[in-house]
Length: 603
Image (tube, rainbow, N blue to C red; front, side, top):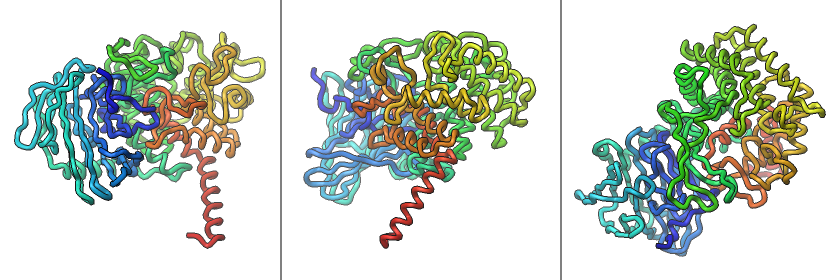
């Protein structure tokens, strides 16, 4: 059977994202929830049209429409907004927050802002990538109940829905008419243990969710992009479980470039990404997100020590190995689950762990277990710094320059903070040794750092140890590296990871937004605030209407590439927005604007 319009995926820049810490959903402009894994991030999806399945949940205007939307500030409560020929309609969307590890509550409220809202609702759930469709359907009073694989389902607000035995994916269909100015609530509950919790009135769910977001949202420091920084924090919080782990992205298998085989499952906790988010939270004055990063990283170090894996499930288990899924995948990609990262050694994660511990120590937030984890990370670097590793980009094992320099940065950071409990003399000596060894074989003849002894090219990952203090600020090798990134890896203030052979930038992959924000920080550190502001502003514009960032940005087509949303991009945006030099630039621009408005007699 041919896909229906609701089954057709959208370009990534049009998807909104709602999350409750335990899982997240993508919502398209037709009000189509195209992706939601239950009960947790790395479970099978119950809605999968994003990757070619037939299970989804849509609320779509009956008339032709144009679409927009917005987030309620400091939350992941999304409002889809449609203007039709005869009405103006909104659908308020959220996952009840904070989430229950075993039950998801999906809230949708249709609001007829002007005119009568006429919408069609379709709910076609299926679990296990479509192999476990709806069954045991019954209506109990005004509520529908059913099973879907090992999940139990309850749907409220849809008493008049009719069963639709669509051969691709059975479900319900419902027409709703909402009078002008009024609302209609739909509540979908899914659980993997027993019956769903006792139902609550929709207003109670909404009020509890609103209150929880207000409670969780810190008062961020004044920064260069207040609205975007607030949203970035909300995205990071929505991707962080109550157990402390933060998934790298909500999705799996979204291609970085069509038909290139770069399709990965990022629904797991990458130690590096979590530490980057923790450091950003510290810079923004958001200690609770920092605490989550420290807690999860500490637990893994205390358990695995020098055998720390690059990534884990939210429960702290090894990531399952990659396997193909029998669905078409997102156009240009392949549906996959699991990740090859479980078999890799990545030295740099120990340096990132030390950096996040040092950030926590600066805010007096380290406990005894955290200090034991500091010792374990230091000892792991001492024992393994000569070992080839897969590096930040998770490719062939080599002596990657970034890995060794970021470890040096982490060692210096804990050495400078007595609260970490680290031996400052030993850590400083080891950091000096790492830098000296790396300098002997990884300094390019031009005076900059190169990727590795075998790779003379420059790598944008080297911006991270430069900004973290592996060497004193302004070191000539660092300056030369930043200049080389600007010259060889930048295009219109977007930054690519590295150049493959003599291929033009953008021919093999998109600009890497993490690197763009890192470049903003690096140039600000070196005293070029205007240049830094240009990198910052260019990269923070590489998103769609919902303000979400993927891993990469196709500069030519102005499209997002890779999994969505990508946590470490939001983390670096948050960190960059809090850089003092960028804050001053923003304040100067705001001052010019105020003076201009005053001169014209404006407000």
